[in-house]
Length: 313
Ligand code: PMV
Picture 1: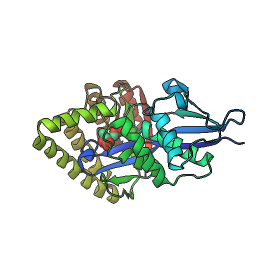
Picture 2: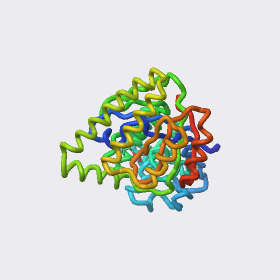
Picture 3: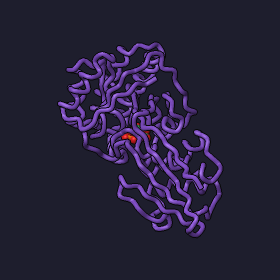
C-alpha cells in the first residue's frame, strides 16, 4: 500500500491576537514557507488497531495506546478516528515533521493537527473537508491553549487570509496588494496557554482596563481590513505599530521582541509588531520589497535566530 501524506502551512496573526479571545476581530494569514507534514505508512504485518507515532522534533516515538489522551499528537489521531467512527483502524505508522518553530506564534500546534487529521482521514478513505479539519483541530487546540479563539485552526485549515471573529463563520479576505513580510524569531518562547492565562488574570483583576485595550485592538483590526482591501500597505504598517503598543499594554511583549521591532523600524519597515501569543516567539515587519533584505539583515544583527521572508496575498 502507498504512503499517505498531508501538509499544513504556518500562520501569522497580522492584527488582533489576545483581543480575539474576548470577541474582537483579528486578521491572520497563512505562511507557505514553513509547514507541518504528516506521513502515514500502512503496517500490514501488525495487528489491526496498532498505531505507532513518531514526531522527532518533540522526541516522541510511541504507541497511540500508550500516550495520554491529552497528548496533542495522540489527540489529533484520536479526533480523526472518532469523527470517522473507526475504533480499530488498519495498523499504521504516522510520522510527523514540521519546519514551523514550536511555541513561536506561527501556529505549529494547529498545523500539526491539521496535517495529521488530513493524512489519517485520507488513509482511511474519507478525506476531511477544510471545514471538518478546522473544527476537529479546534478541539485539539483546546489542549494547547485552554481557551482558543479558533483563529489558528481556521487560517491553517483553509489556507487563506481571514478576518476572524470568535464564534462566527470566517470571512476570507482579498488582499489587494501583495504584502511583503519579514518574520523574525526571538529564539525564546512561552507557551500560548501561559500568555493567554496571564491576559485572563489581568482581565479578571481589572476588567474595564483590559476591555478598553481589547476594543482599541479590535478597532485597529477593522481599519486594517480596509487597508488590506485597498492595498494601502503604508497605513497597514502604522496600524501594526499601534497594535504592538497595545500588546505592550497587555504585557505580552518582551525585551527581545521590542528589540526586534525597534530594529525593523530603524531599517525602514513600514511597521512591525509581535505576532501570536507573545513573550517570545516572532515579530512580523511589513515593508516595501526593495527594503526586505536590509530589514532581514537588521533583524539578524539584532538577535533574531531565524528570519522568514514571505508574501501575503
Ligand atoms: O498560537 P499563537 O501563539 O499564535 O496564539 C494564538 C493567538 C491568541 O490570540 C493569543 C490565542 C487565540 O486562541 O486566539
